[in-house]
Amino acid sequence: MTQLDGSAIPGPAAPAGPPPAQPPAPPAQPPVGGAEYAAYAPTAAGGFPSQAPPPPGAPVGPYDPVPGGYGPDAGQGYNTAAGYTYPQQQPGYSYPGAPTAPKRNPVMLWGGIIGGVLAIAIVVALVVLLKDPAPEPSPAPGPVASSGGTSDGPSNDPTPGPGTKGATFNVAWSAAKGPNTDGSNQMLGVWGTDKLAIRVDSNGVKAYNLTDGKEAWTVPVPAGVKELCTASYGANSKGVAALSFNTGDSDCSTVGAIDLNQGKVLWSVKVSADRMSSPTLSVTDNVVAIGGNMVGALNIANGQPAWQFQPRDKDCSVRGRAAGTQIAVSDRCYGGNGPKSQLVIVNAETGKAASTPITLTGSIEQVDQVVSDKPLVLLMSSGPQGDYVLPFDKDNKPGNQMSVKEAGSDSLRLSGQDEALTRNVVSGSTLYVQVSGTKPGINAYDLNTGKRLWAAAAAGTSNDMRLVSGVDKDGKVRAVVEQGYDKPARLVTLSPTDGSMTDIGTIAMPNGLDIGTSTSEYLLSDDGSAVYAFRRYSSTDGPLTKWKK
Image 1 (cartoon, rainbow, N blue to C red):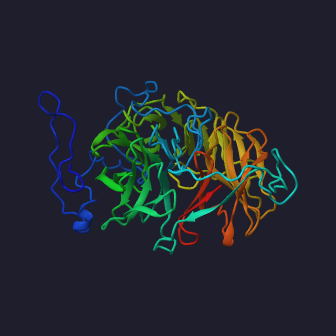
Image 2 (cartoon, rainbow, N blue to C red):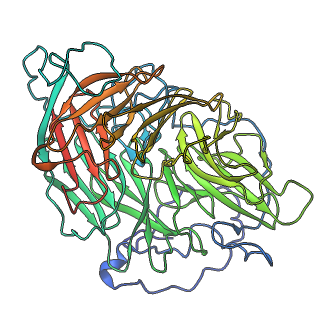
């Protein structure tokens, strides 16, 4: 295995005694795409051993079997990942270290570079995230007038009244549109440091200065690579994140690490001889965790294999979904005397089982999405009664299943941590879900009982509500509420008990800007002084807009 420039990758010190026998090295292959691509092309044949072909009659795609069996540590208790600790509460994108309940974020990580790791749905110790290096002067104290009645406290009416207390957020800057205005630059994730806002899309990675929105650096899609496939949920405490590359025929089995402080790809490696269409990735200070039809981890320093998950039988296929410092793995087995399918939670740094295996009884039941990693909440597909949400406690013991189909309503559409746009947020034992249709709004569900607690909706059937990723210092979710064309949007917190709204302020929407329910990801700075909107496509309003008090 070599580095991107062809030089040898430094490895750990050799152990005493003769080295174990190694398989013969594959013949060297010329780089695809010429010299320019050679800097990015994986120079090792694969990060892990090739997988065996599927048994006769076995499905293909997400279920590609790997030979082997559970290691000796299978079924043991939770093993905390060394060097990658998370607080029990997630402060969201505000107030680092506050005693709040965890939340779900999309594929973004904001902050975390100075004190802990925050992964997009991971959020872990958000430190100085999205905070300008040089604080701007605060506006004059006092209430800001808005149109409507009077309200100093919570209200279910999304129309603020005169004297409504809250800040006015005006546009500070909007990043310039890129060359791709045809909608091809679909956003894959959002990362951040104390100085940069970073947008990952299928055409590359771009960093913008938080102070003025100007481009700081760009990592384009290298020659010979069709597009970027997926992005890690966040970066680690050293500012390193992960990407996967489509090298052709929707094969995204090439994984690389990127340094956000330098704007530089550090290494890339092909991790599987089998095609991986959309691997999920997460990072710790030590590894890049990979979840797909191959499950394993790479050493974050050099891309060398750290471990690979081995199924419990030779005729088993796996499906993994990276979940921060853990990976949720479901399997499907075609022989043996054990359960046909199981679900197990695996420690991302060690590869050891971090839960007792759970028997799955549906004919094709499997893990579909990681809704939240702290606390761990999974979306499972094709259960005996259909798709369902499965929450876990801090010891990775499963709770009650919650159906995504509610009587008299459409099935809930949930987003996973590997998606760039947040449709749901978890805080404590409550799941908040953004719903659309004839009456857009936000519903809250008790994960202990699966029952709906309340539903909050904007005034008027045409007005949208958009969940803000993360929670505030008190564990409350935030939302942006549309109030009509060319009118300021309302920024609110939602009461966890009844969904009543408390104003944070209004967000100016000049020149026809819209909150973009389905196309924008909203974040608040850690100090609450700024709002950021990352747009799924940069062909309309530009890739990123910042509002400031």
